[in-house]
Image (cartoon, rainbow over the protein chains, first blue to last red):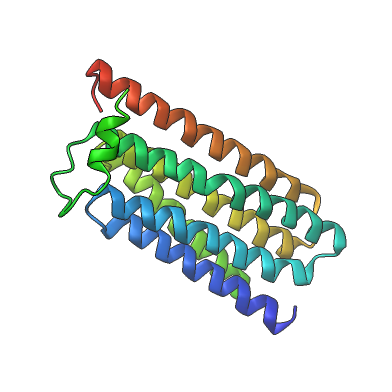
Length: 108
Length: 89
């Protein structure tokens, strides 16, 4: 396999380790969501990029569809989770909660 | 050898998600832990497809991406519903 594929896949793995460590080490909810919602898709995208150099056009097409599906849907899911937690917990660990006034108006 | 290292990294990320799933103080951490585990599984599937050279189970990634999103969205709606009802968060 070419060195580019090796490097990209190893880099994707390292970014996934970053997501895991972020999930373990951060103490507030929001920090964990941020680490998971941002690092893990990047890890998958870098790995898919490295893998597509090795697989034929069929494999690259499948990886492209999976990457587009993930990039379109994952941020929305993590945002829903952020909003759900923000609306149900008192933001005591937040230094300043700019969203609170808007949220209170939209309270349902 | 390097692809073995990549798969080991994804396994670590999955284990971190599993740990957060078991320990996580509240429901929201468990939801995001499952999401991280699912995405590290997707990465491991990609590397495994390269190692074995066949592309047959790559289509599984699309299914996992869509199912992961639907699960997170449904679980966060339940989170709001549970909080309103005062159920254990």
